[in-house]
Image (cartoon, rainbow, N blue to C red):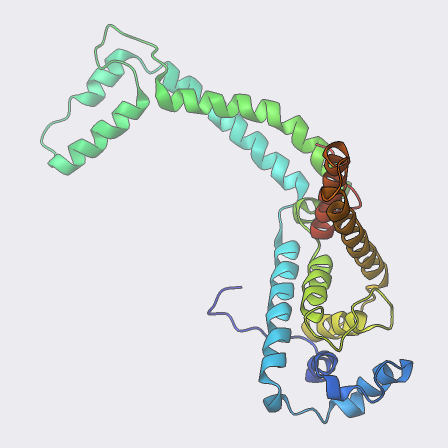
Length: 293
């Protein structure tokens, strides 16, 4: 979403107010009780929130909401796997044909192209530069010189021949020609929303970040999602996974610190670092393990 575009949420403003209510300590009627969430976020209570008094909280919510909308739009408009392979196959075919034509462009043809008269100096220099890219000699007795441009095209063909099967394994099967490339190579918008919300709420002392279905993170994420899209959604499974990964990361970091103070740190540290790297990867992408390539 460009700076000129205006973010227009599809949900009601009450959803934004419910998200803001999570960030403001005094909106908890009974701190630490199960009743507090229900009282704090009841629609009739949220309606009383004056947004002009909570400019900072509103800006924080809008920043996450705009990012979420951008990712949703990117996912919706992403190339389908079927189209991607068709484009790559077309590039390969045309590159091979053009490279072959350039290779058979003999020296006599290049000599003819190089005999340029009655043109401005700037135009002559541009043409000479392009002729140099074609490669080969400008004399008619030297034929079939490949030239750097043809060599690059042939290299592109060879690259696509090698890379295409790797890409097929990475992206997997194309279900009905509708498989979205974006979903295969990036975190889902929902996972990004959870991550941003978790990091923001972790900076507020009165908020206990957790994967609980009725917890603050869940309510904040659900409220923002509804404000952006106008639809309800459940994030309980993704939140549970995210919270589990956060606990794993904290445990591994603590264990690494302990082993760094000990003597048996080399091999054990390497094992912990690998495990921590896997957890960090999963926290970023939302995959339970690194995809094979």
